[in-house]
Length: 133
Image 1 (cartoon, rainbow, N blue to C red):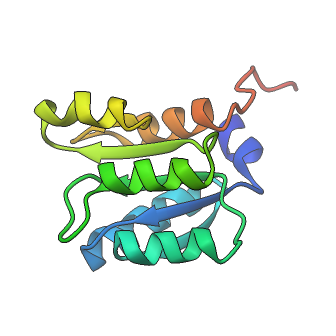
Image 2: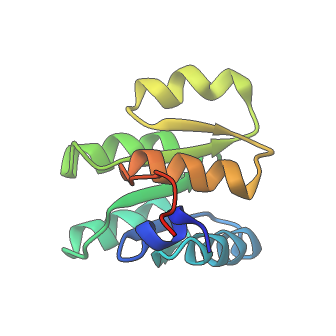
């Protein structure tokens, strides 16, 4: 078990993707980091979760979704909670400026699980120091 897994335990991540298979896979990966996961299949579902008062430490979303993009989700989520970290995954390098303009952190596809774990640890401000014996 890595230091990140131990120190990410207790954090809640809202995972958003319109593709059911991708949503389930992403949720399982995030759970492997030690995080609890809330799942949403659309921007509207994600906003409903945020508006419900559920505790969320980080939002992880795809950029390209029908009806409302992850970029719009990031802007709307930041209106509700300006300090919440939001990581947006995209396979389109041209979207990076829009992602950062929305206040989110871009994660370029394809990415490794280790890279995703490192980005989450950084955004959650997890101490990733060496393990003590």
